[in-house]
Image (tube, rainbow, N blue to C red; front, side):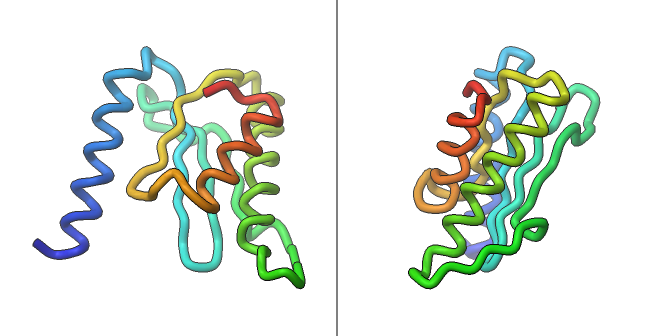
Length: 118
């Protein structure tokens, strides 16, 4: 099987289990590229993105080599602040095809600290 097929299969497996467990809650979806990280809060019933944030909006420079992780933390705080201002408290975390480790975990932890519940 090709790598693209396997990643799509993993992503669909994660999302199908989220649909079963979500109980109508909104979905916090994460996309991670080599340079940036993106987060969206999506209402699957309406098929609309309600709130979004990305590391493209943030300019971070660190000398320790953790600029990517720091931008993920700031993106997590930003998405949580925008969600609470929009009246969103509880979401389901959709890590997609990525492991819950590194930048994805940093974004999730920062969003939890800033007030989102998942």
